Every structure is written in structure tokens, then in C-alpha cells.
Image (cartoon, rainbow, N blue to C red; front, side, top):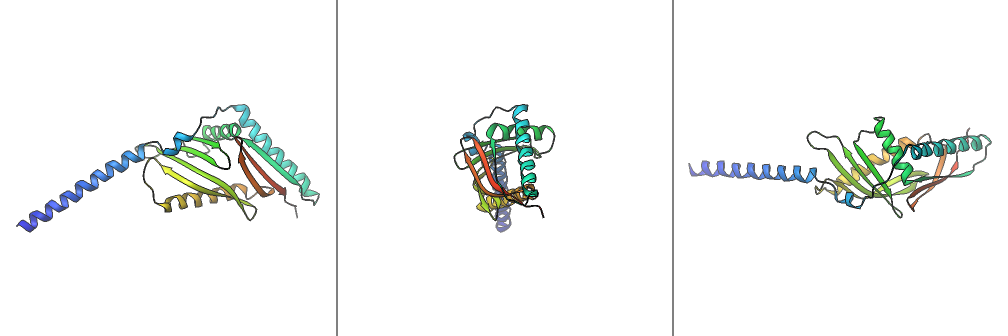
Length: 200
């Protein structure tokens, strides 16, 4: 009888510990990520979003014209922090991104990003710090840190997020008419340099 009572009490204690752990986990998940404290708000405008599109269209036109001549030409694209955030806000408004909010800062050699995603119950707040490297003429995102609320996350989560980001980036640049040779982040700007691809 004592053994049965002891087992029941033991199971009850484990149940209470699990419930407390879930409550604490849910609470930490609902908090703003540590990285968010380092993000600086950026003023956005429709003009800056238009500038983003114009710069991209101009680069594509230039790349197409030079590549048709059979000559590779070096080109560059400079996107400001304001232009990037204005374009992201526009995409949010058009329902193109599965997010509620996104903000990006360009630091000295790195970027900071903060997002709010729709999730059952409480919105998921994430933050990340990373840099962009070039591998085989393609940009590669390397994350230094990834936060989901204030939950303590294993390193494997950061690796999975990094892999997902790189899949998305590769899909975006697949039809880009430029072989990217360098990406620089500094002075609140992202500068992409490369050579035009030759049309065969």
C-alpha cells in the first residue's frame, strides 16, 4: 500500500514539475528577445520603398544590357537601411510576408533583425544577429545568435534557422543576373558587388 501511495505521489510531483516547466517556458517564449533591445527604430516611407525598387530594376536592366554584349561588367547595388525597411513594410502591408512586424538594422559588418510572427496564443518574437558571406558566387547567411523570446535554445535551432534562411536567399537570387562577389554591411547600408552574367 505504501509503495502504491509512493508511486502516486511521485507521479503527481512529476506532473507538477512538468506543468511548472511549461508555464515558465510559455512565459519566456512570450517575452521580447534580448536582441530586440539593440535594434534601433528606422523611419520608413513610400519614397524609400520606391527607391529600393528603382535601384533593383536599374541593376537588372544594366546587367541585361551588358550581358547581351557578351562582356562581363562589374556592377554594384547600395541599399540603405531606410530603403530595406520601407520595402519590408510594403511587403507586410501587401501580405507577402508571413509576419506581423519586421525590422532590420545594418551594423558594421553585421545585421540585426527582429520579427513578430503569428502564433497560436501568443505571437512569436524572434531576433537574430548575423553576417553575409559569399560562397560560390552566392550570398550565405551566417547567424551569430538567434533568439525566440527569452527561451534558452540549443545550438541546433540556430543552425536550422540559418539553413532555412539560406534556402530562401538562394531562391531569391536564383534568377539574379549578377554573379555576386562581395557583400558589405556598414554605415547603415548594404552594398552588393558582382559581375554581370553573360547570356548564352
